Image 1: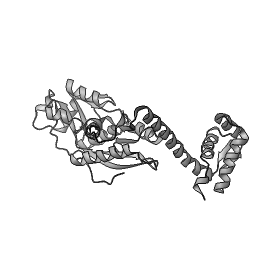
Image 2: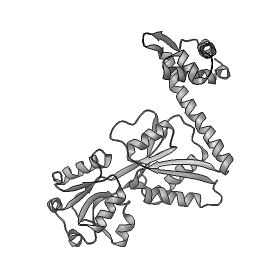
Image 3: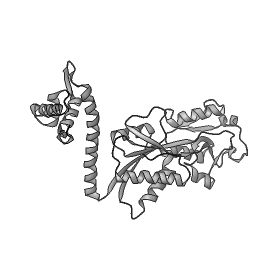
Image 4: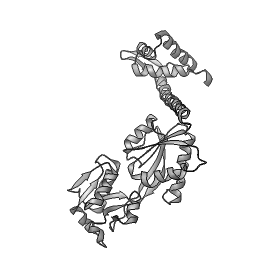
Length: 315
């Protein structure tokens, strides 16, 4: 089979037929005649030697061969759209673009230092960087859609979608953290039973970090806190610790600057918290741009330099 004979237009037309379940509706959407659209698909079927669609009472539906083609056609469509966007941006700005997604807990101590170390180098190719902070599930969806080039986030509790590939990138110790003014901050030893008396700052119940929190509470032998304030903003959690006698279980790297300055304190609890990992994810099968490769390599180098990287092969 000659790859160069495959019709790109025919593949994109197949996506329209899948969406509308109708040859006529797909033709109208493409602003072309129905016979012309049908011919483009028939040419593709002849070249592949298999039927791609079949008619039924529910309209025009893909065959198993069609499903396979459509899966790859979506990737082709996404890559072509990204190509057009990148070319247009480079025409306007003369720069490459890079879209990074990250959970808030990793931005300050890993993402921003990497960006600063990589893109202040005059020899580094000039790049426009878009940084999106969001919930891990939202980041994964954006990565699969092609809206992001790479995401840095904790590994999912569920099986990762087959459309992405990831590797361990960095990790952080975890502990119970309070403000320096907190009554427990001045104690040389804290029993876990004392923690239930105070207000807890928690991520939203549906978050991966909150599920992690529940496991840590169980390990400490504690019940669900009676008083808790929920927020998906790590900045809000941090501010409440600074202003009120509250507690939170946080990655210590996230509040590293506050711990070094003394405005936040880790409580001396005799419990070994599991370290939290952060993974780097990219879309499976997608060719990484030079900007993505440079950023990935810089992340890995920075994490290893700081001694925060688990042993892992690059993406």
